Image (tube, rainbow, N blue to C red; front, side):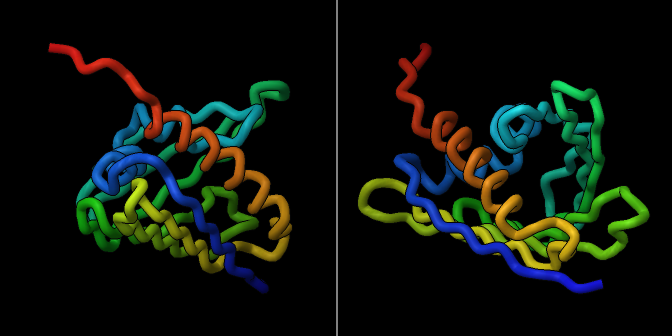
Length: 150
């Protein structure tokens, strides 16, 4: 099966630690990761090197869902998240490797995402559109100016 690589870049007005947390907290992931029109159920997430995760995206309109899971390969707080991601669909058997790099910059965090091994049957432009939705939701989550509670 043929594959391609997706690369994304965004600057967020939030600290690297805040962005790192948003990638590993189940409730945060469920809020920002699914593209528009989908909801996410995080079934399991063990946020440590070697830890496993399992979740599903459900199309809100049709009710159809696809589940996927993986394993965290490398976690460096506020700097790096590297994991294997694999669809449960037997027609998409090959794993993808995702590398998330976080770099502190003057106005927040430079975020770079590299998703390798995306199956060719998933058009690259669809991946980019989905990630654009997700990253816009991530920005809304981590850039929110909320009052501190005592």
